[in-house]
Image (cartoon, rainbow, N blue to C red; front, side, top):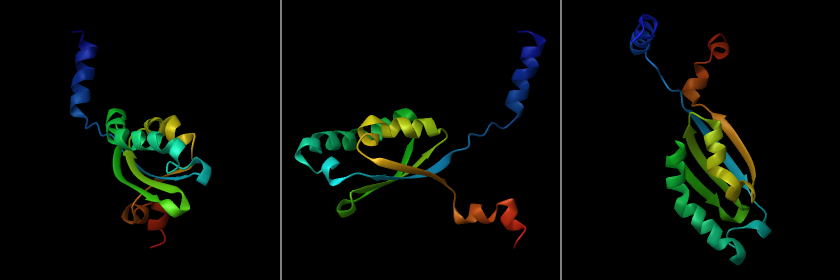
Length: 122
């Protein structure tokens, strides 16, 4: 091992590498015509729901909650990931082709009050 490589390796071990994950709230709205409750889409919706946990795990996405407001034709997902691309891949064609999506990165109230510009006000 070259001296530079050894020094870099030791430096990396010395540093604490921390992966920052983000929380996302996804709101997915579909029309009654695109509803997974319709006969022509029911099998597809059931398959996605059954594969959801495995798909998320493969992509490094943690599902904190998955909810539906059936009368409003709206899904709500609370997801955690260090990669927005993984969240997009998780939702993928099955969901994103049937739904209009709004995906928000969110923080807790405690984290919000820790923001520098808010600390200045308090």
